[in-house]
Length: 272
Image 1 (tube, rainbow, N blue to C red):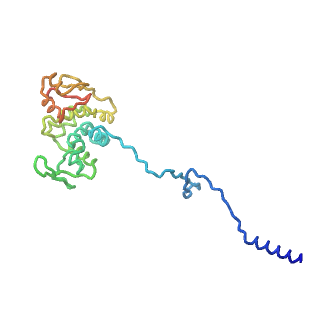
Image 2 (image 1 turned 90 degrees about the horizontal axis):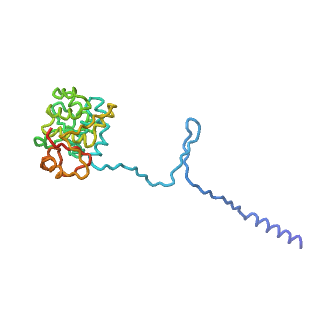
Image 3 (image 1 turned 90 degrees about the vertical axis):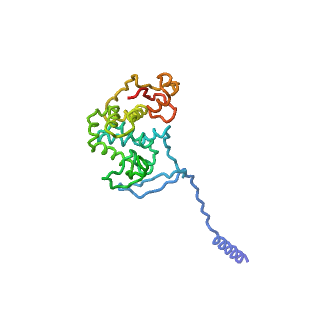
């Protein structure tokens, strides 16, 4: 009887052992960052790049300028300096002309055709064209793929035409002489064109870009009885009383479209 009981117990023990399964547990690891393994480099080393924890996009900061003119200067001063190096035209003059003729980059020709200087098609032009009302209705103007080509055409326009040859005999750091020389050569019909260019150059200190190219001190501004430097409290009305001029005369002489003045702005108080 004892043998039978023993056999039964052994049989039950064997069956119970065969039905058990081992339970394997693994310790989870806390990861602070995920890494991606890249293929081996030619040095045989594994390159490991840490993947960012946050997948959100990082937006780069964009500098904001107070006026469209300041933004224009920041965008195109480098091109103007390159043109000065290559063609001997003061960067200050190029920038002032671009600001004036393109409306600080907001005019239709500059926006739709990258034409910053209002250069018309002329006979030799074989590129793209845009039509715009100017001296006459729907005149043909050059259209560029990039603004830099407009600046280059402006340089070539002055350099290759005989009527502008006298400009290149002027000191390259004398922006006043260049502004007046452009008018004398027939670049613009507006008699106030030189004053407008000089006012822009002095208001925004564009002559510093000439300095950067030439590597020398800029010509110092000479304050005389034809100019007034705006100080705190100045208004067009107060200046008109001081200099015995009408507000409109001051606006016309300096190419002003509003009554706003900036501290440090140079105003002409007598015709050039």
